[in-house]
Length: 148
Image (tube, rainbow, N blue to C red; front, side):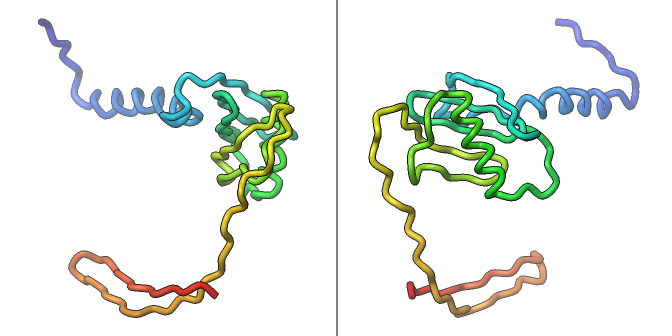
């Protein structure tokens, strides 16, 4: 086996080049549960989305750069992207995520009932203890929360 000798200082440059080629490949790769999904790229009002679909499940990645995206606007655009990519509506109460990655279930004309609503219970929380570790530069806080 022969090895190629690199000139001095080439390893950091080669490492950066490899990273530059690999990082964009992971920006809209689906999660392991969505491997093998059908992928469709859709642009809605300047936002670009990669929609990954398996059966009635979708994962949507916003791949366009947006300065401080607002969730309500991004969600509306993502739902439009899902409908355009799949031809199906988003099932009620199934949409979840943040401005970068969203997940939903589809209703493709079966008139499915809404999924159960997410529990939005409010909590009253009290700090019980607070520890600071100067040597490790860490802080640990113990909090007790009760539903209100």
